[in-house]
Image (cartoon, rainbow over all chains, first blue to last red):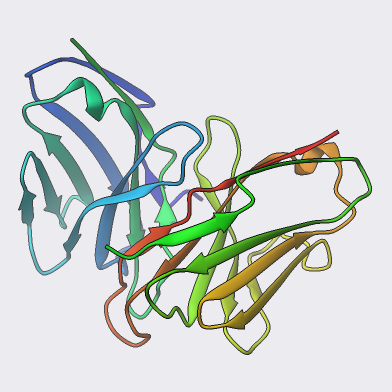
Length: 112
Length: 119
């Protein structure tokens, strides 16, 4: 039973437009959500996070939205840049747990 | 931000040999480190939780006798793949957090990963 799902394996966006990456979860105990970015042959790097007490967190071009009732979160990147092309992992964790459960990732391609 | 290193970055070994991968938190102390394995086109799979000074906690399906984890200090955890076989070829990633247990889940900082190829 996959508790964190990223249903879109890939997404292609034109440079300058908005990229929206989606993530759904099933475990209602999750209270902390993170997005990671991963380039080929490198470890993931932390991008942005959101606690369940919030519904939005913004950091520069990156905004994460959380809809707890729908158990859904999304990452918005605007404007998208070619350097944003990477695999984006959604992750979730519960109280007192340092480890995260990851989705399968979405490969974002930003075309110049 | 916090930095986690891994060594080696790439290793090629013969079937039947053992390989040790080091994970270090360079500028912070990590009481807990995590080891992940990534299969092609798949998510990161948590293998085990490495606790300083105690035995690692392995996820279901992960052979603890094959993947030996030692958390010798607050800045170093090692993963040893014993009697490696070609199916062990993968990308191994460690992570460490800066938070303390008991609070909200902290941000994980990942190492750059180690590409293991078993011939």
